[in-house]
Image (cartoon, rainbow, N blue to C red; front, side, top):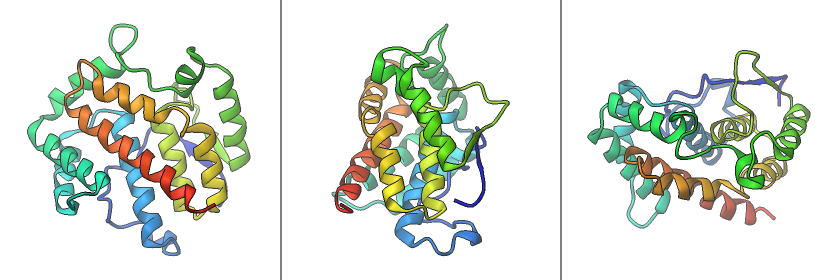
Amino acid sequence: MNGNNEIDDTTLSAPALAGEYPDSDTSVCEEQRYRASAYGLLAALLRSSPDQAMLGQLCGLCEATSEGDELMLSMSMLALAAKMHSAEDVEEEYHQLFIGLGKGEVVPYGSWYLTGFLMEKPLSDLREDLAKLGFERSEDIAEPEDHAAALCEVISILIGDASDLSVQNEFFQTHMASWLDRFFSDLGSAESAVFYKSVARFGAAIIALEKQYFSMQV
């Protein structure tokens, strides 16, 4: 990685999965740009409720579908959901799912899934690894770093910076693979989930594909 990276909530603004990547990253092959954009999009949807402009961008994902591919099918469902819901409706749904009165229906933190409590050892371990990778926590961000969106942002940056696959794999296996599939299952089955059912399917497809991808690199 080149220099330090700050983890903040200025997530990628819903890039098309086959869209442009910054000129400085031209060394990243198309496959890696696709992976980075997929994670960036997922991070944006988990970090905050999409506005109407972002929902409009999501509608374009229909163009990238192909029968039989779960990731592509999940993208198609995400596009259809974006067409069917207003930003106001999705914002209310997001609040019920992740914020609620004291606590939302779904808790998007690794420590919660791995220990049953917030701010536990998995978070301290993550912070140590983030420091080693050159990431710095933005001072104005209150969310712990083990938020699902933050983890997706980190690995998107690792991919975009052309970090070695062994580094990506270690981060994924240590901090993501052990719980994100359960998180997306809970998100998809949550009582208030409507639009976010499609987000959950999209996220689950990414995690499943990444597990397969890294297993082939060994």
